[in-house]
Amino acid sequence: MDLFDILLSASFWAAAIRIASPLIFATLGELICERAGVLNLGIEGIMVAGAFAGWMAVYSGAGLWTGVAVAMAVGMLFGLVHSLLTVPFGLSQHVVGLGVTLLATSSTYYAYRLALPEVTSPPKIAAFKPWEIPLLSDIPLIGPALFSQTPLTYLAFVLVGVVSVVLYRTPLGLALRAAGENPAAVAAQGLSVTGLRMGAVIVGSGLMAVGGAFLTMSAFDSFFFEMVNGRGWICIALVVFGAWKPGKALLGAVLFAAFDAAQIRVQQTSLGADIPYQIFLMTPYVLSILALIAMSRRAEVPAALMVPFNKGER
Image 1 (cartoon, rainbow, N blue to C red):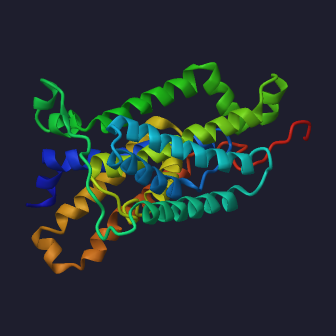
Image 2 (image 1 turned 60 degrees about the vertical axis):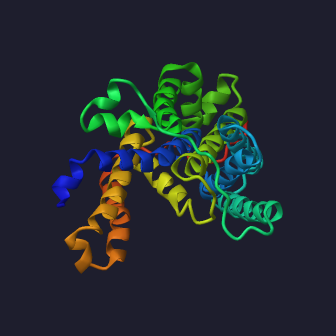
Image 3 (image 1 turned 180 degrees about the vertical axis):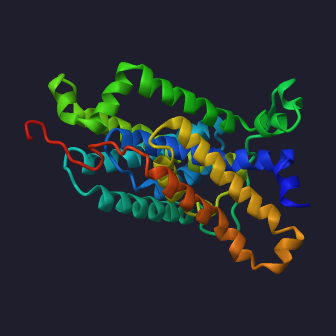
């Protein structure tokens, strides 16, 4: 099978959409934070915590959607910590974000060992099953890729539309974007910049955690610590690639996922037998960096991103 055959196979695009789904959740979460003016580097740890929390809830007897809600609640809790330290107290967003990542990953490891001290291999749960949408799933190529996915994948795509509408078609979205562009103007209108930014970080962190939960409850059926594997850092890059716009960020997530799915399949061809597999593993990241460089030159960064705001100061 050559590269052309791979790109025209339904299984390839189905895998790409599946790989993109957790990236979509987390990228939307990061995008909401940054649109309000806060860089959230806690994303990697929050995804780990969300992956564990959702899986552990289901393993303990809760339903799958309850597990998703638990994961989101845990993510929002870490978002609250992040927002308290960075917004009203004005601490370094870089330092706090990395601290949240360390806190989330360390507390997850502790909770795992506390809950399952004797377990050598992670227990399995009954994860989400694919939902085939009648008629649409029968469309050649597109059907299996888009309409034979798990419910969380459908939710990820729906949320892209929801976030777009909220950001660009509602007064809340206008205020949120203004908080990341000109917070003084927001305060002049009698709105709370602190409240908007904290709310954005809390909600965004909840979406990041759902992205992590996708890995344990939809892509896989168990939890292990290496499963997030740098996806959080990729999502930060995808926000820049998407120029802080949900639609373009979705495109970036699918593009990266397609690179990732392609390298797995190319390794199984005759070409893969002659080239070290590490070359294929790094290919999606190299291509993503090149795409990021090309797109970021035209991107307009929110003017007040990472700029603390204190009411009354100029």
